[in-house]
Image 1 (cartoon, rainbow, N blue to C red):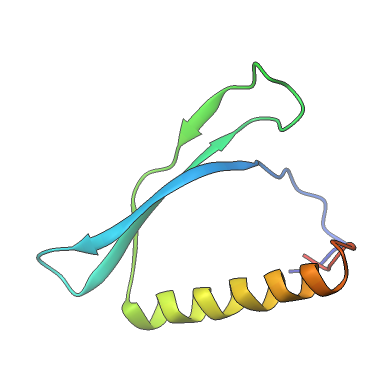
Image 2: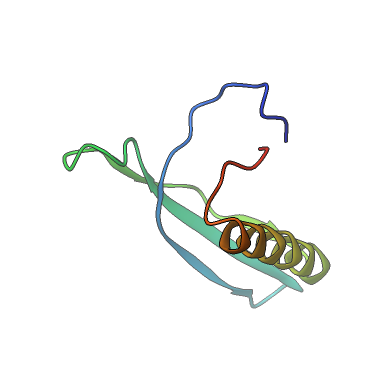
Length: 80
């Protein structure tokens, strides 16, 4: 993603992940809120999304890569 684009960012508050028993896919949904600064912020749950095991592995790879980047750079701003 490009840092030149301004877009709203919603803090994640939790998630649910699991296999869908009748298909070879993983399903997940994400909990999020409208503000990380307001203790009275509204919280929401996304609908369930599905992905193949291959897509999940790719997501895990991307997440780990950016976690490592953040840890190595003490959370300096990265391009999104």
